[in-house]
Length: 176
Image (cartoon, rainbow, N blue to C red; front, side, top):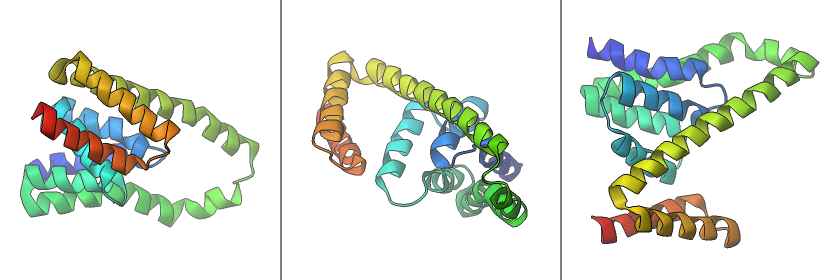
């Protein structure tokens, strides 16, 4: 039964997570944290940070790890397959159709309407992580990490993976 739950937990975000990994992250969080309780918000945030620092698609990295933690090697395989199955189905059946109508005003309008929804979902996720950090690490530490990260990303144009690694090291050194 656990493998069916793992499949559902990653297949549903794959279907409705239009826009790739970043769009499906809040949906994966809903499944693995809220619905099944396999991870806490804090654990999910840590996994997300590590997955962001590694190369490759984020949703598959998270699926592989969570699937392994919940159901072992076969659980990892099930989670990975469930994550890529919707895209595989779409590629097999819909890519030709979308390519044919890519310049259609309706398709362009649909895409423009979906983007704000994804932005809101990512904003909600960021607020949840910020409040979790505020409670667990404290106000001063959270503000330091946020301001230094903002400075490194926006002013110095440091790669986000390096900022994430730096934040992890800071957390390990001063908050661990």
